[in-house]
Length: 163
Length: 199
Ligand code: SF4
View (tube, rainbow over the protein chains, first blue to last red):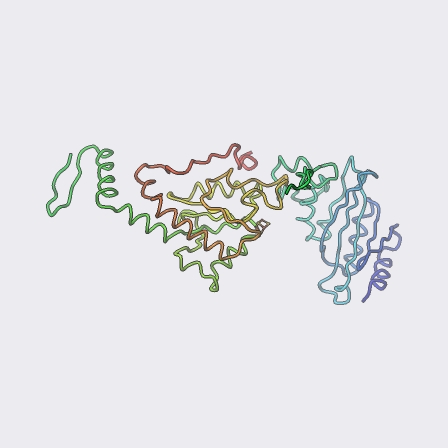
């Protein structure tokens, strides 16, 4: 199955839900509104996408929003196993709250915890939203947001070499 | 008080602390057990299984049949209380620092530390990361191994270097005589690495 076919399947499954489609190389993303996310996700699950491969967040600082995309695929359905489809949403940067998809895909649990500590995005109704990798002091700084600046040492020589 | 036990042996009676000290001096000094202790410890450096980072792969390779670090008398062991060496493999994250320190405190002395990889020396490629600590801030390190990651031969070399250090400087026997380690400061972390956990 190629992406065009997968796109058709997903569009059929999501019929009635407004979605913005973004095509990348080798994958395709459907961005829906925050309210429709759980509904859209459960429809995708019914269509055969049974696990979350990865969960990405992009911080659009200038536009003041986070884009959160769940990349899903299938183990059991051999046709779908070859494609990766993204289902995601956008939340405002100053109040990043969104519904959790743990109850749709169990495999999203730890990835949502990671997103929570690195970006400070609050997943409502998440069963176990604790810190995973960071200590509380570090997680407070939300280290993967764009406004967290990591200082770099200057490694470029500023004086001409002698001799 | 000293009594003669016949056949050249000795029996110490009286104040227990004083007698123990005298017995120690006799054994370590006159009978030259110290040398044997140094020798024996040098050839039984057992590192604890505590893998902090990617250098752990090279750590595994070092003890694999091809490089066979067991020929130097070192054998990785699981329980911290049965080991006397810790091999820091690369980066130590803030959370792992707690595990390193707790493991170090559980190990019986005399104990030694080897820091492996550029990360363990001064951060390596993560030198400006927000989530790492330098191993020498947590435990006293005896030997550093540069490289990213170091080859297994380099790890084996570090073990030999540590053995040489123990035997040449008589680290262990002095440690036992004095009750503390004379050639290395006891490192106390500036801030408690486990504070996030103790709350
Ligand atoms: S020195 Fe290199 S291999 Fe070792 S932990 Fe650091 S990055 Fe990994």
